[in-house]
Image (cartoon, rainbow, N blue to C red; front, side, top):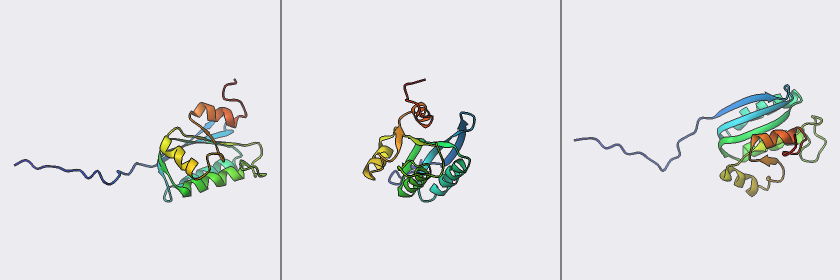
Length: 142
């Protein structure tokens, strides 16, 4: 008698987590790409990478294109980096630097909206637009 394999679809399958940092514009901009779930367990890794970029005086793009989830801990990490850059209107400790977020996933955009943080960050659907923003250029200009 053949055995029947049943799968449990009630529990989500964990997604592998990864962070990749790429440098642009002669090392003046760090793009931190996030893959998987950005939560209480993984947010400290992102915080370390952002701190390293800030200490080096880089502008930052956080690319959430491959992220599947973010929680309040991750939002706090992003807010902290934004404050250090003066993105909240304060003086910031890194001069002439900006932070942009790449995010086109509706489930993640809703988290920014529900928390009221969609206006705290410059959020773009494409990496090219975010890079243009951190360079201080209109996304349509060359």
